[in-house]
Length: 186
Image 1 (tube, one colour):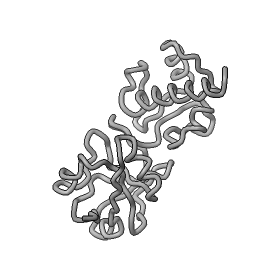
Image 2 (cartoon, rainbow, N blue to C red):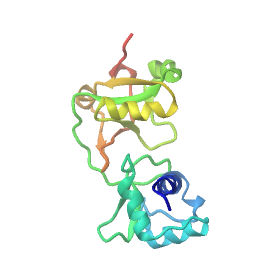
Image 3 (cartoon, rainbow, N blue to C red):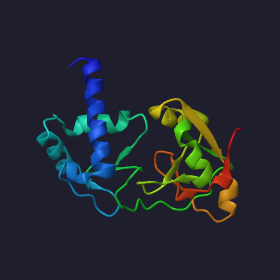
Image 4 (cartoon, rainbow, N blue to C red):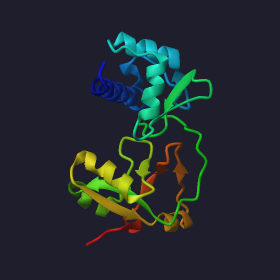
């Protein structure tokens, strides 16, 4: 398999893992426990049943090379889960953490009217996702078009009692960002 073909296969597997480990475990007929973990061997068998050749070594490569570090193994690689971004109800067992003074959110212009009225909503996910730097927020926002980067006054939010969590892959999570804490550039 060429390097290009291998990269395409890794991306295909990563998308399938995102679907199953974050949103629809039934897509692979797997079960997630209360913290989002599933048995690695069961996952590999399920992916193979979908016509994609996967073994533990390739799965390790998918996890290691994922640009957003979306997945994690437990210590002995017997279980795997998504680090964040779930729409299914799971508890990642993250502790509240004091955020930096400012975090960032990447979006696109068509959502700005709603954001100015309602702030950032978690929609069908468990949390609103915030980035630690502008570059990451630009990458997130550019998935849907020309990105608009919002600066969030997270230090003020935290002082006002809003809770923040930090995922293993350095994504900041919160329940809602009220519009009052978004520094809109006019």
